[in-house]
Image (cartoon, rainbow, N blue to C red; front, side, top):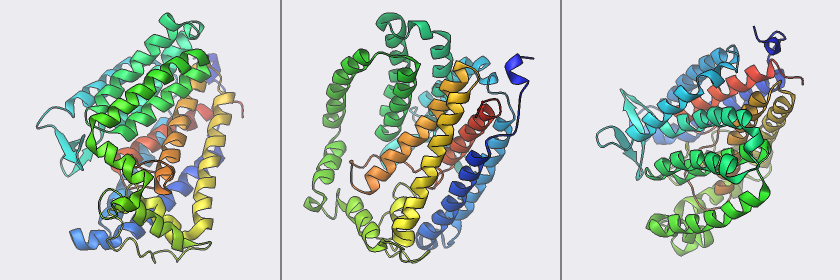
Length: 369
């Protein structure tokens, strides 16, 4: 047996408590935010809550298994995992296989449920990136041998995700990999050069799709089209404002009465802030800060570079997604259509997030923290 794996101990308790706390809040808020909508649509106020609870149970089972599988195993199977993720990502674009929702073809239907391949790609690419960066760290400071191949590996799945299109998930994917490459030793000058190209490409992506231009305009002045593109952000702010310090009380939101569209999804933090106030919203953000702190501690204490980069990739993915989601909800950035980890309704997102936490918890079992 590998010597580094003879000191297996209990997983990080603080991280485990934070995960369960966020998961509990998520299930409660999915019910609270969706009861009115699901009663109207499905004649069952618990429709979304029951499914979220099912996804939570599946995710916890996955987390338990991942927590007990030595993380080095994922280095061995990283190639196969990435290939499967690519196959799923391509399959979703094939007519008759991919399901379209809200203008994006991002799901594959499996019976009464559906999976989102881009969620699988996020964790698959993190595992593979951790492997190649740890195996080739001495080359990462060079452009041709290190930085460029890593960037190509990132932008191929990003391109496939943009064909769906799903800018929010693409941003999380690219941002996470950038963090991993930078931590592995990538040169700032390379990032600056790539950043200039990225700005031009980002402007091109915006100009190529009229709905993205509309979202930018709605972000700059939502009152210009209050019943159209500016509707969501206006209703989100209407939810957050009355919440005040203590909130209106759990279950007492007014915006979930068909004002804020599908409040259990991307804008669930607005309902949370309306019902639980500044204190409730701050508590959730504090939990995410604790999650980030423990993740960084685990990464710094990991017994090898692969484990360190894998832990940083997982925690970076969560933190970037949280930052984007909450920034959208409070009007700091344009709407991107991305869920709040652990809290928002969504089977693929919740299951893959818990699975990722299982891997992080396993790394903690060998880390010096």
